Length: 337
Length: 258
Image 1 (cartoon, chains in turn cyan, green):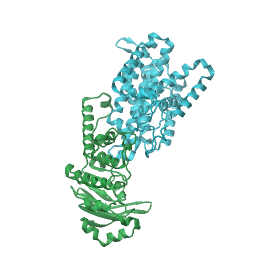
Image 2 (tube, chains in turn green, orange):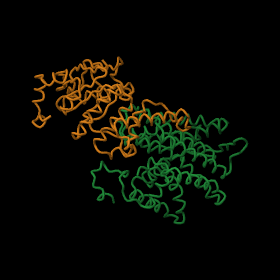
Image 3 (spheres, one colour):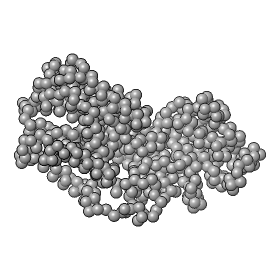
């Protein structure tokens, strides 16, 4: 589209050229929402919609939406690792598992209060992030992908083979938490818990992105040597991405385990990691609204196509391929347009 | 001496790049490092800034040992650099590029960013102000929001200098800052280099092939040839050293037009 109309010798082409180019109306609309006023209005509308949703829809829809919101948290976490810091991670479900199992074991087997167990789960996730990040950060991305994939499988196999994690059948009867006397147990209760978590994950992502650390991730992703020459410790910065991503994953896992009341190793399979990564890539790596959209598509897509019965996964796969063909850098348009 | 290299030797797979180089930069100086292509000039920059590890020798900066420090530590200690081929962060604005330099002069972590603590916000404000001041210093303030890689080449070089200045260095290493500039841009580069030293008190060491610029701006010139320091002194003196003339006459005809 812009190839012939742009005569200037451009640097290696990216979709983020700032030079004027024809924009489709919907792109203009989305870019308009990047400015503070409309953006706030949009955010308020979405929050309002999330609040009233359980009252205007079926319980089934509420459960599906809860799952979508869980994916928003997980995807925003993986986005920090993959989208900001540019580190491919094929074993992200491992951090999700660490959060879920730590809380599951502590509350169900040792009778620890749920809220007391949370800090332990977060610390465990951070340690897991350092364990996987520390030795691997000097690897090139394709090797990193293999190591993270292996790490994800190791965590799952460990959970399957230990007694404390309940073996292959996992843990069940994980007690429901309560907060100041409010017993969080119904589907709607958990829906609201995940609304709050998703909003917190969004705000945290946005604030990190606008900070010194968020910029440092981009610098290191674009040019490690130039970043080092600017005084940025790239190993430390990448490790921070892993640890923060791990904590996001663990938070998802913590509330996932008490929501379902039961967890098993198969909840944290390679497919789970791929699905989260798919949502991030689909929405647009490093673009927060896009990643949220990707999370909703990955969860709601198969549900919306349910009437096609056995064909639905095929149709969903073709749709995903089409999206990646026509928008290889994700659905969401580039911010710096 | 602000920067001192003693008996620094560097080799790659048996190829010696630097032969026991003794070299120094005094504080408040504008100094040039010249020599034919492949003489080891950029390698010397890379050794100073921690990108290469010399096999032997000692490097000190203001009395502190530099050798075997990681590049980011060297920058933190007060040495900033630019690259021979401009290396700006793509897909980021001019201002964001310059803000990179402030990273090592700030400290807010993830938690204070997520909580937007007052200290973090004050620090962000300081990063912004310092970066804007550096952009203003190189005369590119009005381009702050453009994509850095969309600027004219000469301007990109200035963004790189602004980014290096944002690290608040005491010594600035410029690797062929005039390469690819037209004569007008070279003139203003000379002015900029002088202002960096005079107004900011930053010592400057540059690698440059443009002899008229080197003779014009340098107070001291060091000549490197085949990894050995063959001459050092004031511009006029160096110009007439037989060994320097020999080193340059050994080059292709094309390069004689310097």
